[in-house]
Length: 312
Image (cartoon, rainbow, N blue to C red; front, side):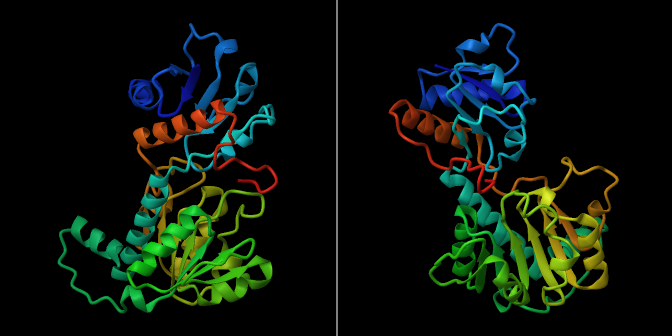
């Protein structure tokens, strides 16, 4: 069996090969642009942002694996072989890492870590007292999939109250949940820190903008770990300047990388991170993909299949 890889650049191929040799010894791991590779011999593809039309030129392809939880760059290919399984990469380690990141971001906002980082950069002893404890503010999580559920559990473990919103009704122990457009405003009104973990769909594009931000309690915090296309960055910065938001941790952007001249880099209330919220290691992703391939070889359905109807 041949797995073609386009993730991390050609320099990462040796590492991918080493990990797949551990978890799927019979798998031949090849680079996406290997000139000696016969396209008709490829069984599986592990990709992040393949050039449109390339996957359609692999006639024996049996499944496509995204190298991350989001597969919108793959699904956007107009020539994508839509009869094939498209598997999102959501190993257990990814949900744990996202939970850790969300907890770190919420605590950073509570302790004003951005202010301390700026003070250190300027060699300034800027003593101040945090106006509230993290457990005194309710965190509202938009998106109650695997990432949202793990984040909610970890936040609750820190004693932080959590509410949640999702497209359809979810029953989450210890978390008051809201569902659908009709309950979103009630959810937002109570979210003193908003965490966006929604997938990229036509319905979520441009969602994190002034109309939504204005429905949050004044002085709310924002943690954006969904997708960059969901946020209108000028609206977020304007809300920060007006005091509607007190701080923001932004891990996703459109485009990426964030351009050097973006005002987000230097804004005193913004912490920028380079889309690393839930990124598992290549070894963890290789183990997950190898397990999915084993399922497919047994005629079973792998987990986390992309659904065109849902958009994720």
